[in-house]
Image 1 (cartoon, one colour):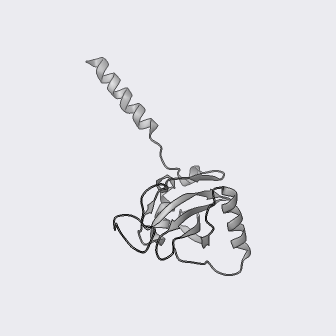
Image 2 (tube, rainbow, N blue to C red):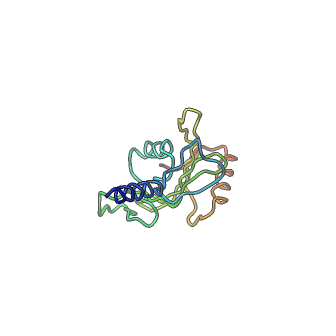
Image 3 (cartoon, rainbow, N blue to C red):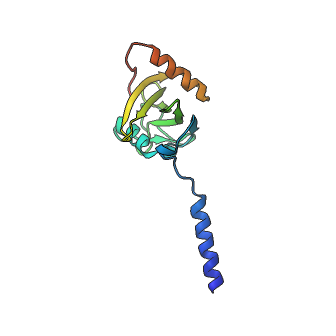
Length: 152
């Protein structure tokens, strides 16, 4: 019986250690991308959700409402393509449904108190797959004098 208890405790420990946890802001170094909204640090997720008035993001490959004809109100109207961090800026590149499906690139910064500030909100090209494309788009945005385009 004692052996069974030890074995059960070991299995529970191993399952707990194998769970992938989101990156915490202080632990992030370098550029990286994630393919699940939940893998972003909570201050970043909360900032995106605040800007979208609580509207959720579907992860890549998940069902979502891509048009203005809402056929299932439980599904999000935004679907993440990928997200992550480049040059110390947090970003989300996602599809937005509605009248004319389109892509957005939104970038945020975090201050020392984990308060997010919007850096860019722009319509984005379809088909980006590389962090270098995100970096280039944000560099071009920084060079322009006009404000952020589009809606969140």
